[in-house]
Image 1 (cartoon, rainbow, N blue to C red):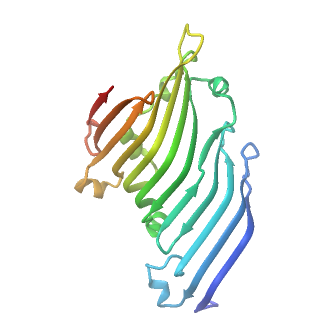
Image 2: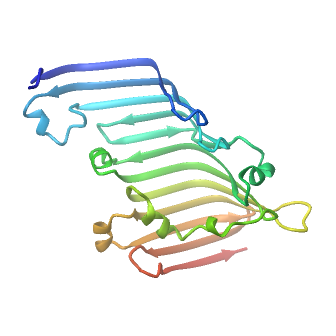
Image 3: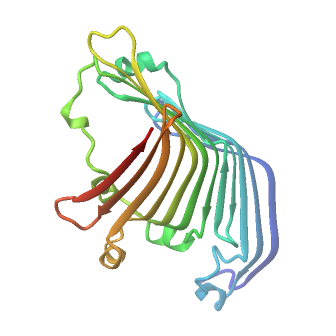
Length: 275
């Protein structure tokens, strides 16, 4: 028997709160959110509202801001950080400022700390905007669905020490294979990267210093990123269009196409280089 058959609250407003989720594994860090702000508007629960699937958690709008977030990954070798996350359920958007993946160890020591040849990676990003998030599908079906993701000014710094033994089990499959192997669903209509940078260093045997290549002014559009088998029957192709400059000078134009349903993972590409 329900104690409450009807709930009506105009607004719930929480500010300057701290959330601490303790990890029972002492070897792993707790998840601490030092500054969280939340507002929920027009909360209604009654027999009619309970059947309205268009309202998220029985509200007209939930807006949440998280500031100064930092979390050390389970291997203790890197941390995820951002200065602000702003989520708005009314227009189904999320904005993240100053996202970063920051290694906690020098790139020259990373492979030795892992115990095998591995990629040291640092990511810095000004802002990410996600639009058209399907919240109910994300929660109920464990399938993240969004209309678009816009990534502005993102920098990748990559280092690999080839002098350290490489285990065959670490060889990564093709992108379409990895996407299908996820234990949750993903559907993103368009991913847009603007003004990116990729710097790659590699240290090989019999070399005293690592070699380097870098790409500037990276702009890319990726369409139809999905592992939804029903959607892929109608739209099986994922397309990538990208432009960049190698060493800040030579312009590269590249096109890639992946057939997400091909049993042999067939993909095509074309690259044009101008000095």
